[in-house]
Length: 387
Ligand SMILES: Cc1cc2nc3c(=O)[nH]c(=O)nc-3n(C[C@H](O)[C@H](O)[C@H](O)COP(=O)(O)OP(=O)(O)OC[C@H]3O[C@@H](n4cnc5c(N)ncnc54)[C@H](O)[C@@H]3O)c2cc1C
Ligand SMILES: O=C(O)[C@@H]1CCCCN1
Image (cartoon, rainbow, N blue to C red; front, side, top):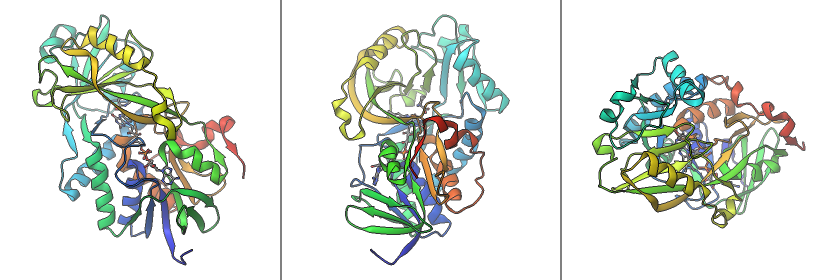
């Protein structure tokens, strides 16, 4: 084992670990970022071309965090000199006076987010080729858009390295020994750090059991479906078609969402926000396509300009908590072990701000956002701690 002691070791080079490492290096912390696979890879949650960024949330605390996240994304774009964000707006649809739609509307108004409310009679003039369901309301969060995911990850890792940060990929962590100085063992070496951040995505529990903790996290596989436009360009980013979220679709219990055709011209991404449980190392053994049936029926009814059978299906994993809120906290027994997990299929847009607060926790500082919605103890009855 090297005698070197890092200020911080970060496990997992997805968006959350890479952003945390970036903030640590910016704060002059000697940092080591360990990744089990050769980078870049497509096995976790952060790969792929695009993600939605939005302020439209049901909960106030997310909308508030997004104010800062937008600023940090803009700063990253400037520093890296590449486009990471494209503004498109986000169309939100759902039953007018209930549930998700009315909660989002209230949060946007309360937080003075620039929003356009669409009346039914003017809907098709603003959003052609979409059938608004009877009884549904519609609004547009005009701040929203698309993040270029793979490109963002590469940019953040590059900036981290430019700030003196070290990445070691193809180094799977197999053991963690807590202490004032934490020892992390990989398949090819051992490293020591004054603090440790665990941002292991779908593998969080596999690793946390090494630090005596098991959290109520469920890993699900999402079929990332792209649907062909009958007339190319109908729903394209260049025709100013927005991203969308549909609450309470008739076909399903959970949200359906989509992004305008962009990364694969002529293909629009539309996905279901629920998948079937899987082992992260056996993702493609999970072949459930129930979500695709739901999407086909929804598309037939509401997006008549798409062919209702997916042209391309990619895969991605969610790591879901019981309440769909993130876990951002210190280990209950070791204050120098920090955990960022359970991003529940909506964490990418928060990457820079999650990285900032995890960095603050690792440096023993008071985090600049209220992290009480994200604490471990809300799951006390489900949490197994062996230490
Ligand atoms: C289909 C899909 C659509 C989504 N859409 C959106 C969206 O529109 N907007 C949005 O904001 N978010 C979205 N998300 C969610 C977002 O992408 C995730 O919340 C985010 O990528 C989680 O990042 P992470 O760093 O926690 O996990 P990961 O990206 O999985 O990173 C964890 C890393 O840890 C590594 N690791 C694990 N164990 C070890 C070990 N033992 N040793 C070393 N390394 C290890 C893994 O290999 C991996 O690289 C979506 C996710 C999916 C799957
Ligand atoms: O985070 C997002 O914005 C997307 C769309 C909504 C469901 C979760 N994933």
